[in-house]
Image (tube, rainbow, N blue to C red; front, side, top):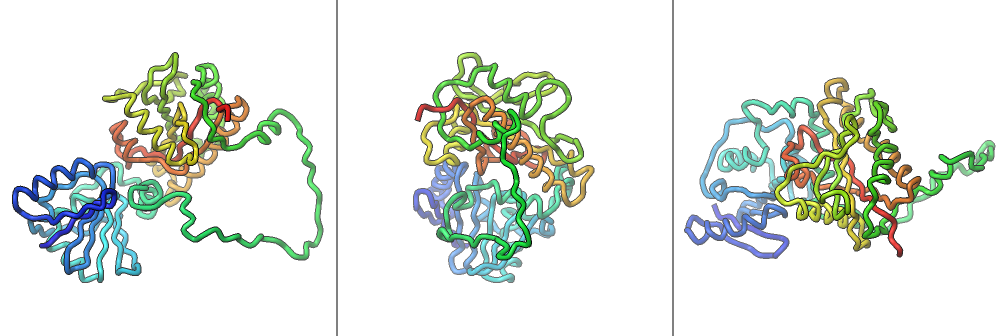
Length: 371
């Protein structure tokens, strides 16, 4: 099989062969693929396989047949070039010209399909039992921005949507707008703020912020959560601070404390989370001193709720973000929700599988800058 590898980031191409030099080149390339997408195309067949991370060259060089059925998380969709095949179990994507190519894939690339999560495992992981097919697919595609363009790209231009209005209202009732107290004042002040200062947030302010939005004193949480389950966990990547060592922390609401996560290089890890935040905060160039990651332990919701568990986790995340935004406004802190978060980085940081616990929301936090 004549495979051509494409690295979109460097625009380099490489023909994959069985000779030692080709295998060595694969090893060199493989190190850079751990953080970005690479495409392998089969010349003459119109088959393209795109993935992020390390994959053995043997999957492409040696023919391997599989009799395992397709995973229940695989979805096939028609597009302009034929059909796109995706799975909620990995960030890989396969492009084929026609459905007959599915037989070719199973007969020649069974090992690769299995490694990339397209085939059913003999025994399904415990965590997967709690996931609906559509939920996991949506969750994966909304978070994995390595697959291609994401965020505010204005791919459809800047159309002005028509205003929704009733041309002949039966009556109008004026509503009062007078402020009634401190809550009204905080709501008026609430706004996303990307202007961060290099000054660290004091422990006193951070404690108040966490207590008002997540709850670190007492059992009652300050935001709504479906079924009162509170499946959320909150983590903070904290940069330079006079009283807190840089690192990745879990907020332990029961013990009213921050628990430092053991990592190989704390400063490098925090920088990686700050880069994720900056990708969402453009045009801001000042990295936020604190990046917050809200996760959901999906199984806790799925045990009780059928077909709406993932939807509830997103609604719960929205309730938390509103509480966090109001708390930041009350304390005069710069706060901005992040449109995307890197689940691969979270899994690398915590060694927790995405199926067990995964990010559903993130935010940047810090003192307000001078600009």
